[in-house]
Image 1 (cartoon, rainbow, N blue to C red):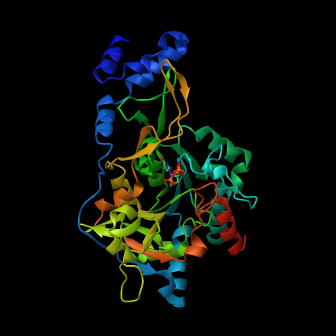
Image 2: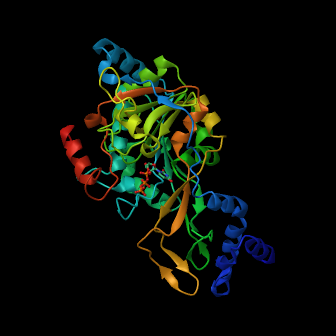
Image 3: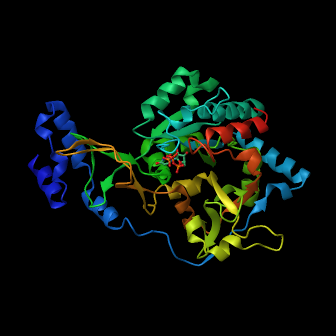
Length: 405
Ligand code: UTP
């Protein structure tokens, strides 16, 4: 106890022990264990650098990409056949990152349990597509689902209640991602309540460390997985292990590939695939100059127009390497409910605290190149981000209907 108190005092975090004496003995023990695991020096460094963008700067050039609509019918058929063959030979895995908090959607539960209005939750949509590919090819597509501490139990229970949507439970894995403390603007770690630090998932870039730590990566290796498809949970039209994408990836030979969609307009606020200092990357809208946003190529298409839709393929060996590398940390400024010693439970309306997270796409800068396949937006991208308006359940439902659901 005294060692922990001294360590907290050294970093100005003694408030974390507020009300400690009022906790039952077993909670005291587990809380001390949790406190002793906090890397206070690292959190201090993150707080001090909260205003510094870790990836800003560098010479940005456009990323090469292939438009799926430019492939001939024969090429499309050939690549699709290659992809199906890979699935049939049991070398493909699917990873879904579902550890996000979904704050904008405001749904009380894991986002994957949310149904935009067709009677099938987002998890069920992916499951049905995996099941269809397995039935068609005779192969097994193991599915690794990243959860967070906050939604892990609910996610697992949801799959159990829904009988794994017909999939074999032995081929579905849940692995929780890492957490990081939430910190006030003056560097104080927030309390969620007396005896519990306020924490949040460490961003979708946490997928690498979590795959490694959970044993999911080892499981893939044991199964002889060679191509790993990675997607978010919130695109209702995502095509897990899309055979065409797999065939395109296999033919290209790059360590990683991503799907993109054409930016809807120069001002659409999405990250775009680019090349920075010779390495593939995703550049945020704010990092492109107005001229770059407007620039068009000879065909009249936006030069920086390949929007990232969080749909990637990684060769297993590349994934394995990425799992052992660190990623830069970004800071989000958010309204975080917390317990304030002396004042009680606070629910701020305005942003009050920093959340630190890493992004999966920052990993691409470790590669020499990647292959981008631009697909049709209306057929493959129905994001569920906001409660209403753009990228909401209503827009996703309309797109699903348009695609035959
Ligand atoms: P977003 O960045 O859209 O975040 O995640 P979110 O948590 O879903 O929603 P908001 O911002 O709180 O409203 C893109 C994808 O990355 C996953 C999400 O689940 C989603 O599939 N993600 C995000 C994680 O798995 N872990 C994280 O820590 C963050």
